[in-house]
Image (cartoon, rainbow, N blue to C red):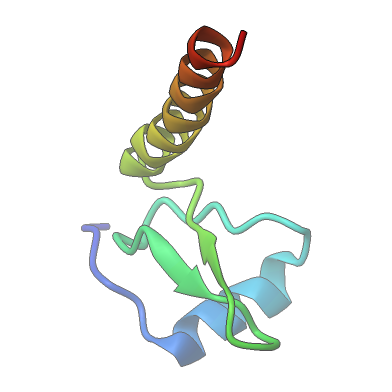
Length: 73
């Protein structure tokens, strides 16, 4: 099965079928997925690029903490 961007209805059907807290669909090429409730987003853990997003976020937080450590006596 080739990767493609899934529609919101397909994502909702996948979530009903698999349940759980995490969205990890390897067939979906989307990185960010809308959550079923509210206006927030989640990350597709089945997409390998999502790990780079996580690394970037945590790297930025660690870098800012290190900068603050150097600047504040």
